[in-house]
Amino acid sequence: MIKWEEKSRIKIPGDVQVSMDGTILKVKGKLGETSRNFRDKYVRVSISENNVIIEASKENKFIKGIVGTWVSETNAMFEGVTKGYKYEMKIDFTHFPMRVSVRGDSLYVENFLGGKAPRIAKILKNCKVSVKGDRVIIEGIDKRDIGDTAANIEKATYIKHFDSRVFQDGIYLLKGVNPDEL
Image: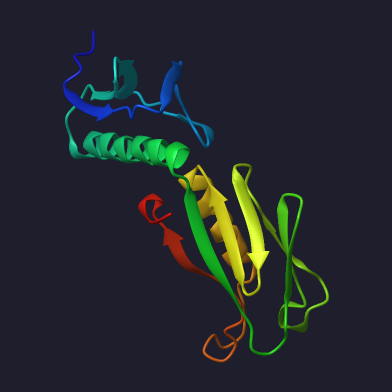
């Protein structure tokens, strides 16, 4: 029998419903629903009254790191379903004007550095992407999906074999807005 020693309690906000399905924590709020699989040999997640409890069976720095990560991810899930997240990226070009558009679940960058083939960035499932002038706005409830989508867009316009001091064309993260600033 494992003795569960370390405990972290996270208070569930009043306008959020939380449920467990095995090791999957599901969080539902006014903006939508998100879930995360919290599976580990030495750390477990449970729900008790108005708290999410994260317990560890061992006490060492690696397990404490997992507990801390899960606490911050759970808090991010609560903030995401109640307030949402928004990232803003800037389209920057000096040599060739590029055309950026959203088609389905992809962002297309055409005429990048005068190239004929479009560069394509995948948009993850829980993200809404829009292009307004020289800005790309990414919105959603899952902070991890929004960050991955921003990384996909930035990676699609990465320039190889050119001097980055001269060729600064691309799409770059301008700011990630915290939920309190929305």
